[in-house]
Amino acid sequence: MKKNIVLFSISFLFLSLISLSSCDTFNAEAEVPAYVQIDSIKVVTEIEQGTNLQKISDVWFNLDGSQVGVFEIPTRFPVIAKGERPVSIRAGVLKSGIHDFREAYPFFETIRDTFNFVGTEIIPYTPVFKYKPETKFWIEDFEDPGIKLHTNDSTSYLSQIIDPEDINNHLGYVALPDTVEAFQVFTKENIELGNTPIYMEIEYKCDYSFGIGIIMHHMGGNSESQQPFTIVKPTDEWNKLYLNLGEQFSVNPGAISYDIYFFFAADLGTTSSNYIDNIKILSF
Image (tube, rainbow, N blue to C red; front, side, top):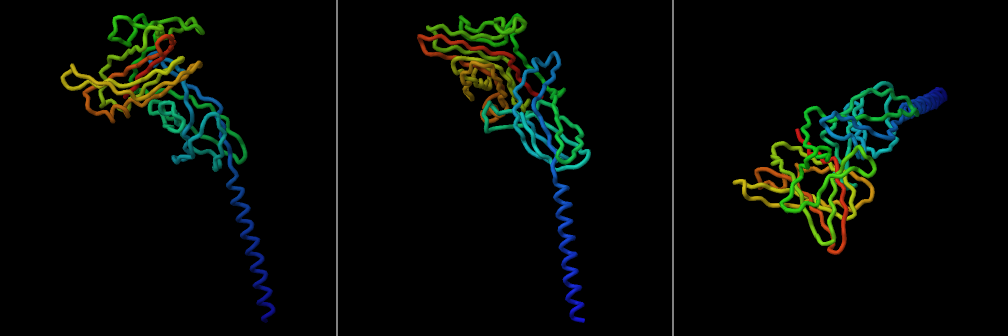
């Protein structure tokens, strides 16, 4: 009898180990990931929304309403899922061009789609983002006869030129002669803090650093002050920045409205060339 009990116990233990091994095998198979591959991104704009040129740095990817991760473009990332599942994708940008500060851009619509996940298979996808329909735009793309950027100087070093690389496009060009050390232009929009979030997009190419800051209009209308908030570094290739103006306004609350200024400078005895284009101020 004892021998039978021992044999039964050994058999039960053996069967249990087989069962556990089968469960582990099943779970391992269930966790084989599929992959999402995003090599590029597109932006589609309406006529009144300006250029569709973009510098989206990453995608914020959600599955079933939960965030999978933030992935720098181009990317291929694993997703533990099987079958058709709802996904959502948001466009991410570098805040003020700083690599370590990434944020989901609030003015692009979230893409919602359904992916069919099959283990080990790759899902190629190209997100196409659009601005949210409630977005309000102030645009200076230098295509109209007048320039919306102003100066207090009698001589302006900002001009509107034909793009040397594209005759169908116009640019803003700030050329400082060797006798001029600094030059400033600014908007006249009287932006109110209540319109947050407020961002600015700007494309540029320059051989000297230039500054961007805010003008604070105080009570009474005749008093104002200036506060710099970013320095744009020289680049011989076109670049694009996304600047969180509302964040800057909120840390400088002592004003009834705000404007943006651009400060160009160079060493005396040298000349500088600064190209700017497609400036957008966006709010809701």
